[in-house]
Amino acid sequence: MSDKRATSMEQFIDLVNQAVYETEELLAAAEYDDEDMGMVLEFADTLLQQLRQFQQQVQSADYAFRDEDLPFMAIVNSQHDVALPYKFLLRMINNTHRMGLAEADEEA
Image (tube, rainbow, N blue to C red):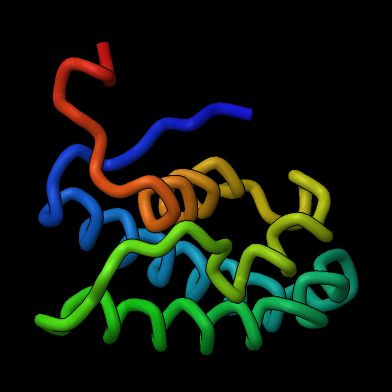
């Protein structure tokens, strides 16, 4: 498991915003094509709610990194890569939350 992390708070917020966007797109696609993507409807709504909640936390002044998985990781870990093609992004967000920001030279 990769432990890639954001290197700045700005980048971290961008990653969370990107995850919200990707989940909105995934949900829209699943609603449009529920025959082929019906399994996505089973988790995408909950995932989007949890991501939006986390998005608000991260943007608040009192956000703190904690060494614990984010609530949405239960969904992420239970889904196949086909159903959730941006798992790497969600894992990077979770790794950053758990371990804090990476030093810029760690990314090299």
